[in-house]
Image (tube, rainbow, N blue to C red; front, side):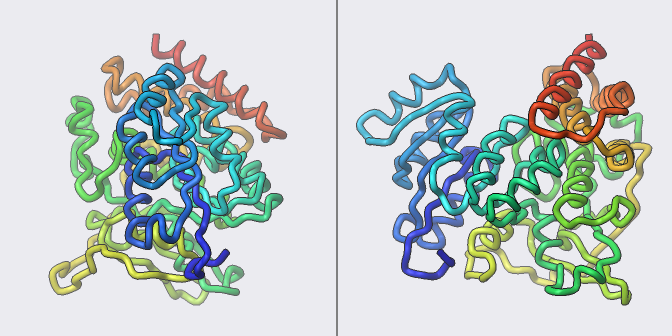
Length: 391
């Protein structure tokens, strides 16, 4: 049912306790809350207190924690509410398989892949904030969305900007996709400075408020590397058509260049609620209580080329795009293993990219995935090699 009608839309939020999930609930509240939307399921992981509070607030039918050891805690927190409780991988699949028309896919990491594919197969509109669906399983995921008959609407600010800047009936004229990058907290840092980076300094993004995984991914530019691969699948462009430009103010969220020399850009104050609201009400726009861009105060917009010596993740993304096959899945899994090692203090910040590159080189000749089992196998092997390299 199209947004704006009197009928309540059925929604599910996979990953409701993270930054995307909490912002999604804020947008839903702004746009009418329980009067307009029927929240079927919410899922989270470790923060069961927040998950239970969210479920009670929106009247969810089902609450799921991905951590099976927290099932009893979540059940206790929702005692007497009438809200069903589930846990683990099967619980996430159950949530995704409910008949929500619109599903926010915001589970961070590989665990978000299977439930998002489940929702896609049954024809839900997918608001995609999970990078792994396209990085690890791009071709399979796009085919699943197409076969299911739902719509795929990107929520990452960069891909939402591109989605909004693509002129109807002008896809033939798209010359280049230009992804903007803030440069993160280490945009001007030297390689020597970056050798001594801590988790706390890496998570301190200058413009956006995000979770730990995404913040550190932004600092290392692995997030941008993933976005390059996502853009390839989302917009059906060749790898050489994808560019990255550093834009410290994060006001231009990304751009589309056309064959006549025109460049279309989407601008706005850094606030994920704008992209979330667009995905929720697409193809209509609706009023949101977010800060408006004041050009007089802004005064200037700066741009610079990315430094792939200090941020080799961008080079690794191009390598994955050129090699094809399962290199996206390998890159993603190796990065997750390296990220965990960095957060746990077992390796330094710069060592993450070295580990990823070594794993990619050892798994450089895998054929494209025929089904999910191929992706699971590549994921497991990449993690095994990364563990070996980290030991």
